Amino acid sequence: MFKKAVFPGKYIQGVGAIGELPALIKLLGKQGLILASHSVNDKVLPGCGVDWSARAIPIELFRGECCEDEVTRLSATIAQKHVDVLVGMGGGKTIDTAKIAADRSGIPVIIVPTIASTDAPCSGCAVLYSKDGVFDSVCYQKTNPAVVLVDVEIIAAAPTRFLVAGMGDALSTWFEARSCERTQSANECGGYSTTVGLGIAKLCYETLLTYGAAAKLASRRNIVTPALERIVEANILLSGIGFESAGLAAAHSIHNGLTALAETHSFYHGEKVAFGVLAGLQLTGASADESATVFSFCEEVGLPTTLADIGLGNADQRKLMEAAEKACAPGQPIHHEAGVITPGKVLDAMLAADALGQARRGAGVAARHQLA
Ligand SMILES: [Zn+2]
Image (tube, rainbow, N blue to C red; front, side, top):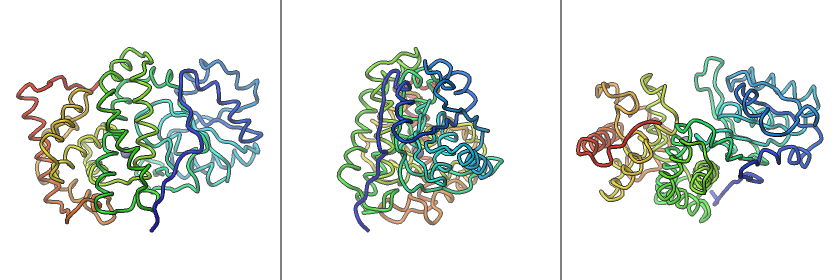
């Protein structure tokens, strides 16, 4: 196995960046097509100062699920309209559908995330679901998106809970990267970490600690500040390159285990990942100082720090064990952690993180926790 890192072709971020889209479509092809979610079509596209029909760029409405039927439908439209550049604009599922359809059609894709809730936009993979929203498979594309275009004004206008969840996803990046480096485990693009992958993961963590709280305040007031811009970049670019090029470990496996419990389904990916980070630190014997720093960060920005915060306040140990077992299934990246990881150890780590979270709240340490 070689060292390996992957990147999007271009990353463009700023206020009003959406105005660059027509020129980018023209740069990459002759006929563009925008796949947009309903809310993007209703609220974002009309207000961004571009007359799409005058520019002969058709808009296709996303039907709500990233599933085989939707990808097939979109691929047929691409062929019929001779589309040679596809744009995916919206949240995670719209973006993933665009990535898969463009890859199958052999055309470049431009990703325009309208929320910063995960680090998926820059990556070269996408999650396919069944028609009813049950996880099917992860699809790997031949290349990462040609362009990721982020208009910070659009992100600032979105609900704050999305940005905070994105910080939870980004919080895992450094700890998982560090674990993969320590054990020389594979990253998410099939290689060993490069210096750049690790360095970006570290920068992601430092950026969150420095600017996370201020960015949340800016998002609450729907204003763009330098702190918000740094956090948008951390959530989308730094975390995106970091997870794919430096690897996953305990936090995402614990997230995957938690998804087995129906009680957690109303919580976002990044919210469950954040609890996975806190449990992961207990699992791997992180120092008390480091654990306290991460707890403080979560408390300050409003990420979950107890099981009750992710809907599991009344869960008994038998139920939690189900999640711990799923987290330790063969092939889960939790096995990138040092030593032998067992469901029993993971259960204890989740309970330990929960106990610490409760004790800190009980003691009134930064007791400002609330989901935005
Ligand atoms: Zn993630």
